[in-house]
Image 1 (cartoon, helix red, strand yellow):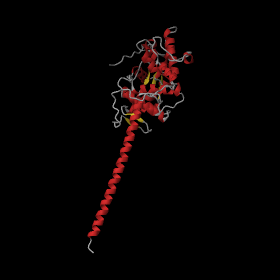
Image 2 (image 1 turned 90 degrees about the vertical axis):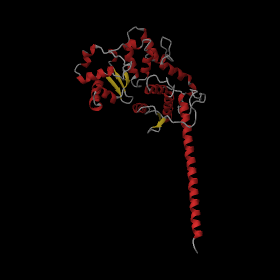
Image 3 (image 1 turned 180 degrees about the vertical axis):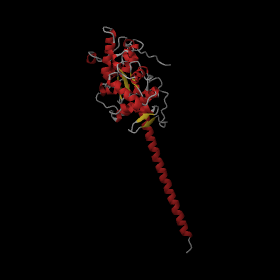
Image 4 (image 1 turned 60 degrees about the vertical axis):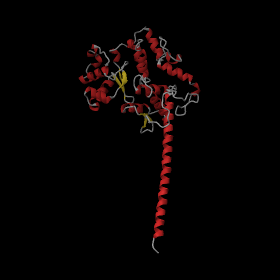
Length: 335
């Protein structure tokens, strides 16, 4: 089912668009109504697909237009995270409706998934779009730990009693004081339950692997399409390998459990990465994934060693038979 997007008729009389070309206006209209778009107007986009949907070449047509809109302060683009921010979004949509009861959780989740370098600027702009004096300003500021709530509150709770995404991460971090300073990798905390979360999961040591090794030596879930894998690789550029593998294993565990990932694999992974950066990431579903891979590797190595021994025995037997044959020929030779 398609989503409905609104565009104010003031777009045609906007002084900010004065002097812009037809291509500039067309591109802005696309990003305001794009199938990639979300509730908050800052979302992950695949430039190649966007250009194809517009009927343009990505390098020679779309990117030059995007640069003009970026220079004008109408768009922002993070090439590493493949995120675009339509800065005029709230001129066409209601910021207050975005934090109403029905949309609040989704809006906060999408804000939490923003590239780290954008978050403060985006939150500031978003809160200033809410009506002055509206109690929602305080609710959103608390939920996003903005302004006076950044340091004064250990965690934030929306007024409707639900803990926000950032609150969950900070609360979890507070409860993990014993692991403070611990670098997360395959060596998991001793007190953690290492058992499988789903009792129906096949725990045989020999299994069909669901991950594939990348050029960086990491094992990525096979369920990722090329664009998803590239986005995740970009996100992991500054993450130590052991930590990166623990995060990928957690993603694999979530993929295998239906209903865990509500939006997209990349957005879910960004949530894991944000928790990791805040010190609140605790492996759970990924433990079984890592354990299975270790067992598979050990089984594979043992099998190769066995094959090598068997091959060695076969070669030795062949050499003995050859020597016997040669000796037999010598004994039968006439004197």
